[in-house]
Length: 322
Ligand SMILES: [Zn+2]
Image 1 (cartoon, rainbow, N blue to C red):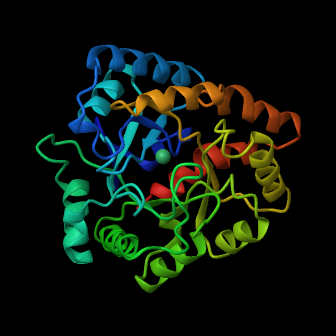
Image 2 (image 1 turned 60 degrees about the vertical axis):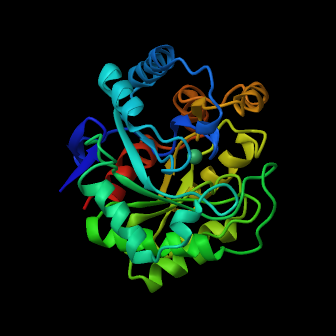
């Protein structure tokens, strides 16, 4: 079975070194109502430079799990992919209660939402003909940006069940955003278990900033994947904390983990002002940081090449394989 990239189908065996969670474009819901000075041609050109840079560093595939209501732009992704030669996989699915899930979806049941996800995975997104290759879900908020939620909300529960149904209908994997300060990875797995989803198809994302080994063990022992996918985003958690967790897990025999930065090429709308400050506060938060700085640190600490290959290449292949 093949995997949908924005430029066509590939086999899981051809994914190669995969960054599992990055973004080309993103926008907070409402950005499209506030005209910005977005220059598409320039933004594509500078994204292509960044993609070519990581391609030269050995990255072959780039997953952009931007949810459908957060500035996802399939045609932008397709243009960047075809001009850079990067295999780009985009998502269907919705974001969390705090920032996303428009009311339109909250008034549906899980089957109806799953039908929309399935259509985007099998027929394409809107009239673009570009197919999603992964299903996004999200729980909790964003540290420093949204209030604490205390639990998975009703609307998030709806999207989790819809994602599970679309997963079973299509074989596409599920990638879950979780807050670092209130991570609901365990509860997400409970819902997936109720829905009969194979945990090999579930990635519990943004785990690296949680820094709680018991949380990691609980998720890994159940057979799901962990995303150590915010390297360089040191305003939330330092790379030292992320690396300590990662290398500790590897040292005691766990390696069902995938790596990324959650870096964003361009944020749409006026909110981009705050975003520039965030970029300045996180100078290493870019697509090349793992290849240039994190993997060398791991090698220097004695992590064997075989483990690095699992994190970057073998694990994404197994996760996507249908
Ligand atoms: Zn993200």
